[in-house]
Image 1 (cartoon, rainbow, N blue to C red):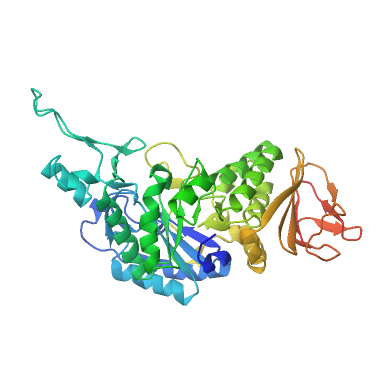
Image 2 (cartoon, rainbow, N blue to C red):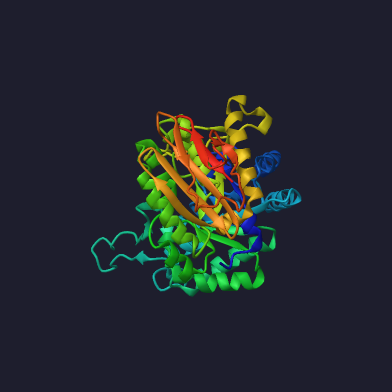
Length: 451
């Protein structure tokens, strides 16, 4: 693993700024008027520190028509959020608190107002601008002139114009954008829709970016595919671990922990090559509190997130038990991208138990930084009980998850050391360790981290 040293200790808190700060749904509603909203995130930086996070994963902040993923200018902050001075001030405020900032870069596609796309349409198929995109030009000999040109897009969304990653000018643009904001204080990049970009596109770009910023962290959004192969050929530090995300809630809902067993074994294989970005919620999916059919299993999901190898990321609001269902329709993300109050003090106290559980498990994570690149071994699996061990050298933790309606007792095998000492101790959860420190007793639907 060649990732920066600071990532070994990283726990990220993800924010989707346009929603979080209550920005207008469309850029047209503000015109060129700048609404200095980014400063509204500063009170929440202290919240992130209190949570135990060490970094902020910031959703799209660059000029766009609508949701931020239809970028029109990568070098201009969206006026609905502020200007460059506001963003640089946010970097500084985060750094004052010991928080890193990872930006969201949309480099697979652009919005239809992207200047080079407008130039391509105006200048025609032989123009340098046209080479940036995969355009289909009409037949000028057709009786009606052939109509207007069409373009390749992102997953059927015509508003998202696909870039041609074989064009050197596109690579130069991406490098310039990444370096520009790193020069101004950003610490890393999330590469949106990285799975849609040829992995080999990234390697020379990232090599040049790292020549100037060797401590940059780069994680790609990869939903499916060959995680290890993509990391190896792209030069990215990590990719998003969607396989584990799906298995966590699905296995708990079905009370079929064999699915989670399979995903954890796969996760250990991935972790041998890189440290995956792990999560149980983000801006694109139904919130974990809504996804789980049994609220007693929310702690189980958090226990997995914060004890397995990788770099854990908590989506803003999940730490207070926010609910929200993503729907496959226009505006279907709104429920999982709500506006937040002005300060954390304005949050409902009803979410405090979930917040405190996050603090407990993040604290455990921060006290055991070796978990970042630990090895994971499943010790036991049945429909209602899963037990796994994470270890690095002499360090080890054992995690037990039960969906059983009855109490469960599970004895640690004599040949399985916990943390190089006896007796074992319950470090978190609803379980207790008895019988000389070798038997864990879980209540119905209980869980426990033993060390």
